[in-house]
Length: 195
Image (cartoon, rainbow, N blue to C red; front, side, top):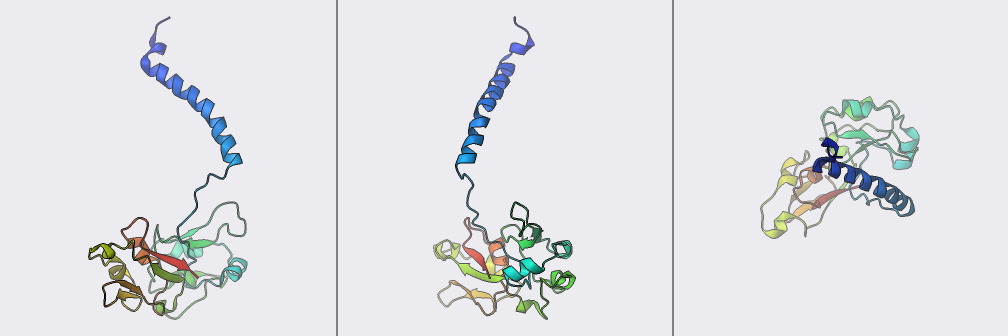
């Protein structure tokens, strides 16, 4: 006996392989019996100009044109088992936000009308930002203003109250998700609730 196969490294590798073969069937069994998926807490938004959800799903061709022309590369397409949602465009502000581009490119390229054109980026209504003051670093005495500084709409959408709290103005907020994207806290102190 002896030889290279019985080195400590080879024994460890064999032990890991044996353990893996033992644990994998158990993990598969438990996954089938228990719902071990973590809940998704991120906001998922439809692109600018999206029709109400039911209408949107009926109208969208799932062609991907809006994905291709988005200058911020913020628009992605859904995947998964739900066939009515598969291939539809969405924006996840934790990954990338709509920048409310001047071209309004996604709306102009949509052939189905699922993304209805508006005359100005200020007319877009994807959702509404909501602040959790307890999570905001300003509530702990820091002077962060990233959500205001990065907002493509500016003070019409998000500003400071007289007391120094972040205030979202429903009349100006487009729900683009830029504030959420740049918020430095985890979990995010500001999140966009989709319409």
